[in-house]
Length: 317
Image (cartoon, rainbow, N blue to C red; front, side, top):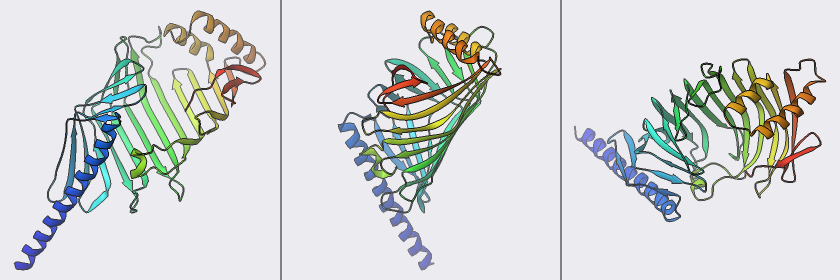
């Protein structure tokens, strides 16, 4: 009996010391980010004795240059004997503000799991996220929903800088801004398979110096919506200044339907839509299938080119 009591006391001491270390580390990291104006929160609490570390951040906010995110809470769980393996759970309702526009994000269930290496820097080994029945509603009046969204990443290099990333969203539907005749047709599948390389590992120091994307190898990107399909592949290098350099090939099937949809959703002005239609029509004339076009994009010296024609400045990454 005395041995059992001793072991229980030792384990209780381990949980207390471990929980204090976890809570102190999180509070220190979040306080530093709050001082920098990047995050805010109401409180942090930790429970779960004796087998878990259950951390709850109340009213978290994350702020970027043109984007912010807020939620009622964020929970992170870990087994006390496997603190390098965590599960994160988000609430059913969240808010995202992008370029001054508010979007309400909802989900029946939204959670992720991650495994970190047994090194003091805690490099990310792999992670996955599943969102069931996600919804996105804009103040402008439109609403998007999906059956499920999945994201997975796996470290594929010894230094932890390269990750194989997969994203899949199924059953996407839009209301309030859907083109006539397409509103009842869900996007069957949006899919991405890519390898992303960063200038530093994704580890516990990422909060202090955010890893910068250095290279993106897109093996396959695909969007299927009714008869329409868009596919892309290619490789892009990102300079230290954030300028992308490389080549992407985009294939559009039923491109005229896509153009009509873009017009009805006001994604293109009448002038831009007319110019784009003339260009795509000219490209498709010499192909076996005039409803499909293959577009070779080049990103060079801060500009985007379609073949030899400059389209405009490339986005900064």
